[in-house]
Length: 175
Image (cartoon, rainbow, N blue to C red):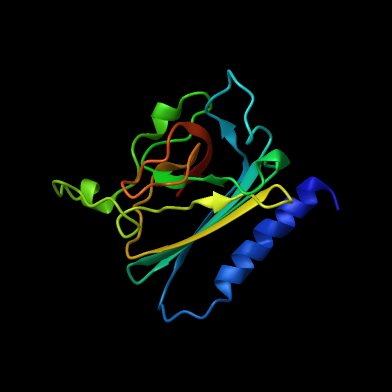
């Protein structure tokens, strides 16, 4: 199976897995994004160069389930954990700052200081498998507002304060 067919099959399976999961929602919205990751540090070779990702978000009744699958990660990175988050701005190759800060419901509501945790942000940290893939799931008690957004993959795992180091790559997400 070619890489593109395998990637498309993975996207269909990811959507199917979420769509067939039991849910008690009257109506849900599904957002998908897939394709090559955009390099945010093009001056240096990195473990995500040439990697691709699939994102599926299913929202309903004030809750959102998010799944991320990344493939084509440098296999020398097996066991390494990368932080990944939904950001408020767009994914622009070579410009990590364009993605803005993390999408944080407290910050967007004007709460000062905002809580920074897995209930106010979408955290999708993943660990690289021997096959050069990474998988993440997050369930959050909110529905992100539509817009031109980015899933940003960071150099380090997310710490208790939401920080994960430099921005390496991103996946555009718009709805």
